[in-house]
Each structure stands twice: as C-alpha cells, then as structure tokens.
Image 1 (cartoon, rainbow, N blue to C red):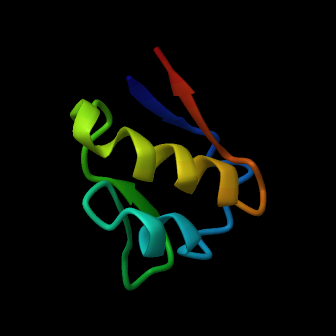
Image 2: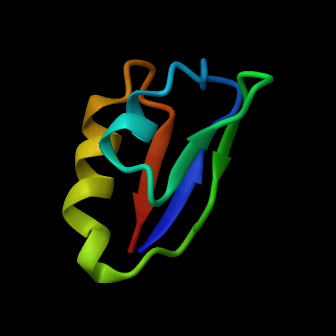
Length: 63
C-alpha cells in the first residue's frame, strides 16, 4: 500500500494524525508530514480509517 496526498486539497486539520499518528503528523507550521508513505500491512486498518475520515478527501491509497 502507498499513501498519496493531494496537498492542494489538504488543510492539515490533523484528523488523519489523530487516527494514525504512526504515519501522519502535522507540524508546528500546520503542514502535513507523511512519516511513512508505504506503511506495513498491520497499519492498513488505521490508514484506511484516516483516508475515510479526511474531511477534504485529500488522502488516497494505492495498492
């Protein structure tokens, strides 16, 4: 699985970080950082929930 973020849509509201802090982080400048673009399968459920809960639908999964 690979995480793809559309940074033109992303508002860095940190919903994804709250759901899956192992993969997503919003820094002090309100910029989303994807800590691991290809996380392990054991995080799939949390990443999929973060994708579903993104208010701007800026996060997609490939694979």
